[in-house]
Amino acid sequence: MIRMEKQFNERKCLFVISFTLLGSVFLFSSSAAAVDLQADQRSVANARSTWQRTVETISSRIQTCKNYEANIKYWEQRIPQLRQEISSKQSERDIIYDELMRGLYCSQCGRSATQLGGMAKFQDHLHEVKGVQKRLSPQEIAQKIAPYDKELEALKREYGEIEPKYDVQKAAREACSGELWQLGIQLLNEGRSEEWWRNRYWDDTITDSHEKMNEVERAVERANQDYQSAANNQFYSQSSVNTYRGMLDSWLQKVTPTLNQAQCQHQLHQSDFNDFVSAFQAALARLRTEIQVLNEDPAYGTDSHLVNGFDCPIFMLSSNPVFQLSPSVLAILKTQGSSTNTSYSSPSGSNSVHGAPTSCPAPSKAPSGRPRIKFR
Image (cartoon, rainbow, N blue to C red; front, side):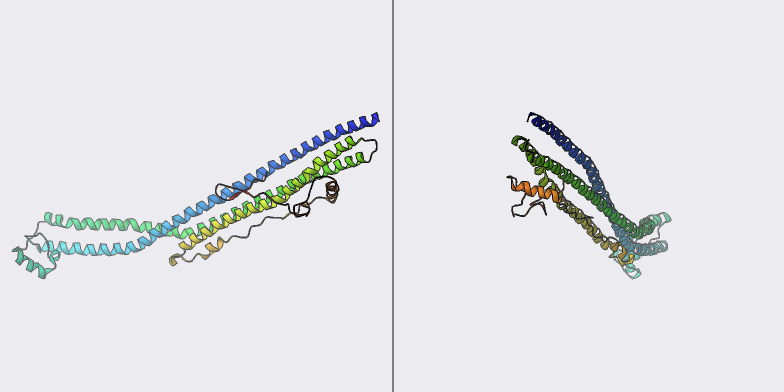
């Protein structure tokens, strides 16, 4: 009997050591997986930042194109106005100059015939003010004509500055279509990049969850074998059997939380994935609207390929995994659960290990109002 107790104590020590080592391996493997998941999370965040920067670039480019178009529309109206004003001012200047050279100038008020309403009114005016026609010197004529020359110079200078700018900005506006189309394709590719990284993150999370579940299942099976061996051996005392049973229960208590966490991951990932798709499609819709505003001017065509280029394909998670326990662990749960106070059933009476967990935690909210998922 003493020899049996000694063997039991030795075996108990080995079991405790193995239990501790197994727990350490479990934590180490989880920690290693966590490093990979954290790297995936960083890649997801980088992908999000990349396409958001592209959205800002497109928005800025669209505003630049709108500025081009506003200038073009203004100059399209201003250029013919300037041509008319220059021609009119040149004619007025030439007529006044001719009249001054011929002496059609009032000595009393200092105005020419045209400025007084024409030759008929000019003669009446001279009679009314008791003035006479006065011939001016070349210096006086130059002084009188200088304001007309100054106005003509300003109009011609404005015309000379506008015309080359108009040509340059018209060419730049016409190039906007191609630039926006290229940026739109870049944006869609970057959205697909975030989708790829999210699916990789999801696949790695699935692998991590399965590894955790497998570790717990193997530990439960080993602990159950040791418990059954002790319970069926008449040389073991009841306290020794209870010790093995306690170790089995400690592992059984890890089963349901591990499974529930794995099952909740899909809900949390899907929620965050939906948030990404919603934000990305909202950005596309806003950019599509802004591009359509640019297309309202028929002078530059409809650019329908731009709008079509921003159509967003449907994004999806790559898989919808089924997390379930092995038949052997289910049998242990059923057997041990019926003989202890530990319950592995949901409040509705269905066993939670067969399907979805009873409830999953709601995603925490980011300051922006969007869900912020913390998977670990």
